[in-house]
Structures are given as structure tokens and as C-alpha cells.
Length: 500
Ligand code: GLU
Image (cartoon, rainbow, N blue to C red; front, side, top):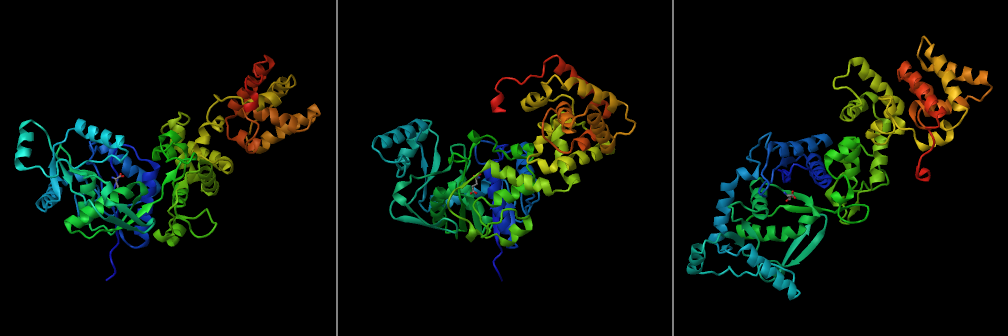
């Protein structure tokens, strides 16, 4: 029988999900789904940060946003439950005992101050700091004395002092670590909680994980995990360490680069399918120049072997371009469903729009979608659909609104539009062109100032169509307002015009 592939995504629930975590989840998911394997969600809360329902919710939401499902996990159960490490403490205890009995784990009484001193000394000697092993061979008496001194103890794993640990990584290839360079890691903290190293090894074993796919930052940890597995007589899973994701300055992607939380990208109006496509191409290549690939195409072509080991850069402009491609092709009704909460968050749409208002939003989206990359654009550049409260861009001021001929044109246009009994692109167009004819002007000489007055911008979709989507009375009001402001010289270009 073919091996049942089992992978796991194992986030620490910090109440925040970095886009790099989602990338790891995606690659696990792709591999599992393509191989007909199982995707396990395991919550690694052995850190001081305890798991809260909110923090779990952030993990679930992030995965669901990208459309990644899981077969086993805290909320869906499964044969290897519990899937939250803080609920598995007794399980780890048995493995610690096994290590202690085999002489591979020992009590360490060093205080944080002593450890810091050790580190300083090593640095001063020019060697990489590590635990110096001073509690390795304490006698029972030594231990007793320390306990009487009121010292707390943790448990450390006794690593090998000689030889190498070799990792055969599916993505990174063969990586060799010198055993002499690492100190004995803590496996049980003074609090009695296991550390990540112990918990991850035990759980990957008990949950029968076949492939550990995680970020390359964990590669140095893997030498410890391999040693632990050997000491516990556990067969190691196969490892695939995904390449680093860098910001545009080629340092590791972090909060310094701006938005990195999954929720930030959703709030900016990235579509999940665009992010899926974009993240899949960070570290994996379909073997061709194609960039727009559907979920299905990616699933069909994905392989761990085709993942590269060199870091990839999170190119924001490319991500936005890709999102634009998806926005451009999307069904307007579907897009409107994503745009609505973004507008509501910005107080530009009511909490419970009527069916009619929703249909109106679909029409706005349809008119704009070929020009929009991020859906948040609807709250900035295209906010004029939703409110009279928008800025007049400098270019609109300079080219059209700061012109003595503009106020009378806008006023005349307002009067005529106000009198229209039908508010459609055709009637609006007829009115605008009719006025231009009467004034002996090219249509452009009326269209441009009109656009500037109604939208505050100089570019956008068909003016007549966009005006038809805004209330007649609002359009008339905007034309009069711009006429008044312009006549009062209040629409002069401002300040650092060149930068606009
Ligand atoms: N809890 C670890 C993290 O969030 C998971 C590492 C692993 O996949 O082994 O980085």
C-alpha cells in the first residue's frame, strides 16, 4: 500500500498571522492535496503565550481566507487528538523520562544570570555562545544542595559532542552541522512546560507526520530534532525547508516592511485567489514563464522538488499587479462581496445595504474593476462614488478647476442637469455635449472640468456612466460647490505640486 502522506501546519497562536506563516501553510496544503494526503493543523502553544480563542480564530481565519482546509485539528478533531500542545503535557512527560533514563537528559539549575555570564565569556573568547554543560554531570548531592538553595531547574537534552549531523532536505539538499557547535537545549522549562524542540519531535512522531514542510529558519533546529529522534528511537520524517522570504531591501520580511499580517493584505483588498497564486510562486516555479495560474493549475503542477532553495523577494508591486489581473477578470458580483466590508470599515457603506444598494455597488464595481489593483482603492481614489467628501487632486485643480472659465461652465451644466427628468448615461451625455456645442467649445472643454468637479480627479472610467451611478442631486451639488470654490480662488493647486 502506498504511504499515506501526512503533513502538518503548526503555528504558535500569537493572535497574529504573518504572511510567511500562510506561505508555509499553503505549501503544506498543496503537497497534501496533491498527494491525496492529510493536512493536520497543530497549535504549538508551549511558549509563554497561552492559546486564546481569539488567537485560534486568527489562525482559522487566515487559512480560510486563502481557501486552505485541514483534515485534523483542534476544531475538527481526528485520530491523534488533542491537537493543541498545552493539552498534551502528560504525553511529553513520558518521553522526557525516557531520555532521563537513558542518560540523555538531565536537570540544569543554572540561573538566567549564570547563563548570561556563560554567554558573555564565550563571546569574549570569540566562540559562538552556547550552554557550557556545567550541570551535565551533577551528583545527587550537588542537585540536592541546589534544591535546598531554592534553585529551580529545567531539563536539558544532552547533545552529541563530536561528529556531524547531516540533514537530507528535499529542498535545501544535504546540510551538515558540526555537533560540537551546539549546546544542550532545554527540553522542559522551569515552569514544567516542554519546549518547542521536544514537543515538535514527539508530536510529529505520534501524529505520524511523513513530511515536515516549514520555513528555512527552522533548519538549525532540525539538527536538534534529528538527535532527539535518534535518542528516542524515532524514525524521522522527511524534511523540506522552504526558502526565506525577503522584503524588497533583501532583509527577512518583517513588520519593518509595513504590512505583513494576513489581515493587512485582506484589508487592502487583495483577493485570496491572487494571494494564493502570488505566494505559490515564492519559492516554487511551474517550470515556465507563466505567472497567472489558477488554484487547479498550481495543484496539478506543484512539487517539493521544484521548490528552489534561494530566498525569494516579496515584491509588493508585483503582488498588486497580480491582484489587478484577478480583479480585472473577476465576476463583479463576487468582487462586490469583497469590496463591501472594506467600504463599511471606512464608513462609506451602511451596515445593511438594501438589495437595490447592493446591485448599485455591483454596477460601480463593474465600471471600475479594470482600473483597480487593490480593492481598497474604492475607499481612496474612487471614494467619490460613496461620498461628497473627497479631495480635489492637484492635477485637477491645476488643469481645470483653477481657471476663470470654469465656474460659469459648471454652473450652466448644473442647471441643465438638474432639469433632467431621466438620469442615464445617454441623457447626461446629451446634456454635456449640448452645452459644449452651444458654448462653441469642444466637448473635452466641458467634460474635463465636469469630471474634476464631480470626482476630484482627471482620470477614471466613462464620465457619463460614472455620473449616472451617482445621485443626480449629488452631482448637481458637486458642480455648484466646485463652481463656487473655483470662483473664490479656493481651488488653486497646493504646496508640493511636483510630487503629485
Ligand atoms: N510553531 C513553530 C512556528 O510557528 C512551527 C515550526 C515547525 O513547523 O516545526 O514556527
